[in-house]
Every structure is written in structure tokens, then in C-alpha cells.
Length: 337
Image (cartoon, rainbow, N blue to C red; front, side, top):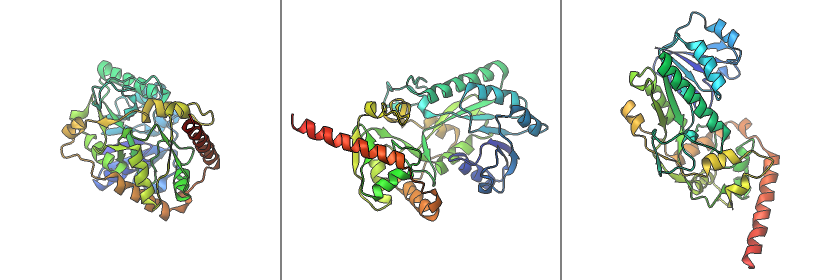
């Protein structure tokens, strides 16, 4: 089986690339070649997919069983892919996002039939528009699509925090320094995180799967955690206590230095629990097996082995310190009422 992965070395896609190679797939990656050492056994097409003419030239004569798109975010990019891969693949898989689901949710558990509606985050609205364009292409011209919606997926090189700046490591550094970490609300919102290794198992099971054509499906774990539990497990992974600073999401959304509004009000501020019946039906035997406390210890170990990843973010740290100070003052003032 031949697969083309557009991207192929990112947080999610690298695990899929490695899994496919382990299973004996003929894997080709098309990207700018910045991280080609991460997947040395895959064929490489060095090209910026945004250069459509060059991509079409390099793809001429190629046919694939599956094309998987990991780095498309707008309908124009989807239209380009339809032009590039029409007649060249038996299946086109688009990575969407679980943030496309209704916000705030009207039901506590999300299924694939939950409405797609997110008025708070442009990223999510663009993903919805991408899905709409693909579904029209499937209905009107038999373009063989599958839409996959990850929730919060992490790998060995990625920390999980509800609020962060340009480097999530700065939150870990704050924990190591005994400083408070910003947590939206009171930290009790239920959230779903999935290790990319588990996600890859479900995703690869959809590749070349005739039952997945024309379908949309999310792939997540079944473990439900609060943000408090996620941050506590992270602190325990580095051997330090978790000190939260609770801040209303509506206030964090107003901070001019960072565009946190969409990602909080349109995503992490809402409970996200998923019914995974559909992926388990399409991929019999699929089950997420990496519990978060285990997964985050793997992240901590990976960072210890790769100190070059420990990038500090002084500007974010200063913003956090200022917010912590303001919240402490507000708490003192309220206590005097």
C-alpha cells in the first residue's frame, strides 16, 4: 500500500509515519524537508505544498492508495488539494479538529452527529468550512474523502497546559521554580487528551478502509481529566507541587499580548468528553492505552534527554507574574468585603 503524507513529521503525523513504516507501507512525505531526519525510511518530496505548480510537477505520474493531509487549515488549501489529487488517490484523509463541535455543547458527551458550530474561534470555523468543501466534493464528484477530528493530542515532545505562550516549557519551568501556573476558571472543566501513539493506531486503521470513505470520525482516548488533574500530573512528573492561579477565561481572553480568546472560550473552557463508538466500529480493537500520567512522564523524560527543547519564554513568564499578582490583590480586596 502506498501512502502520501502531507507533513508527516509533526506532533501527530510523525507517529503515523513511523507506524506505517513498521507495518510495511510504502510511505512518501511531501514537506519542506526541515525535519527529514525524523523519518529517514520514508521517501521524500521536498516541496512547499503552497506552491501548487511545483507540487503538481513533482507529483506527476504518482498514484497513491491514501493521501493524508495534516497541514491544511483553509478552504482554499482544500480546493488546491482537490485539484492536485483528483484521480491520484483512492482515499484523501483530512485532519480537522474536535474544536469544530458545538460550543458551548448542548449535550455532555460529543458524538460525530454533534452539530458543527463554533462562533468563538476562527480556526474552528475555517476547519468547518474545509469539511463542508470536502463533503461537497464527495457528493458531487465522488472525491474519496475521510475526515478525522483529533481532540487535544500530544506526543513525547509536547506538554499540555490550558494557557501557554510561545513555549509550553515555560509553564514547566514555573512549576520547577515553585511559581503558580495559570488555570482558566476553577480548573474543574473535564478535558480529553490523547497520546499521538494511540491516535496513530486509530488513524492507520482508517487508511485504506473502504468503510471510512465519506465518513467523519473523531479519535480520542476515553480518559476524562480536569485541568487540575492534568496540571497536577504534570507537576508530579517533574517532582514538584502544583500551585494553581485560577483566572476566569473571560479575563484571560482580554489579555492583549496573547490571542487566548478563541482557544479558551471556543475550546478549552468547555467540557470535552467523546463517544468513541464510531472509531471502534470502523477500526475493531482500537483502544487508547496510554494513560495521561504515564504519557506525561514520557514527555518529561524526553525533555531531559533533549535539553535543547527547553526554550524559555520570558515575556510569557512576566505576563503570568503580573496576572498572579493582580489576582492575589483582588482576592485580598474581596476578603475585606
